[in-house]
Image 1 (cartoon, one colour):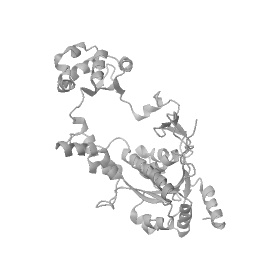
Image 2 (cartoon, one colour):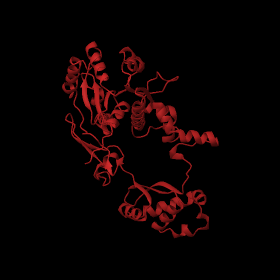
Image 3 (cartoon, one colour):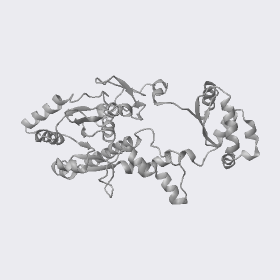
Length: 385
């Protein structure tokens, strides 16, 4: 597989845990950076999570090197500073007070290492909430994301650490901009990425609707539809399938595929507003037709017609999906402490090649201590640290 590594030669020191900070480091590793993950001597606590958290560490720490340091000791704190002197980027998600107590506040780091880019992954940007603790679910509740996801009275977080991952993506995105600016100006930068503000951006469309129309959208399960068909249906053999018709062409294709010529001939169903207004009448008919056919037959019909449709799948079923299993769809990762696995990379191709620039193994605790720390000692002895 052709490897594209635009960040070759860039060294990232990452001192973070859970998802937001580690995902930022992972994205930079995918682009070819050397990412050194700093862990306490006993290892990142995220390694020990079970249940829904079991995938956190292996997913978001692929392609990194692990170095263990006890930052409660002056010796290892000095080692970290020596390591930062060799780095281009420092990714962290610690509380501001904790960093300041260790002498690692962004202003202090910029004074010692003018070319260093510091990417701080925080719950909030500067403001009234900046000292609050935050996690993905917290900010989803605060911003209205959970309100929009669940039915009225039952706010519900979305089924992924999407805010954390997107926050990490914004951190990596900002690092790329800062690297470009450093090439031009010669100095680093202190970046701060807010999980709350990230989630706020995700609900901005609903905020703007209220700002320009004075109306609030109801939660998504109760939304006012903007399309004639955008619904879940059940096949004769009990499989759920999503079907949509968002354009005039899709409406015609759907009616043709389901042999609903009476809808095409109905003078009250000739425009999209008419079709939307008639949903109470048309959707039960469509549901009845779909409910009278088997899932495999429906999938084949919809695929041939070029319709907007989707099987309702579970994440575990993605390992059997033919598109996911195409070359470049999943990447192998060794995980000696558990078991090897396959997982997606960046959803990007460059010149028809997947964008993965590194081996994607999950490091064991302190696996790269000798390699990284011994090199630091040699650099210090030679006067280059």
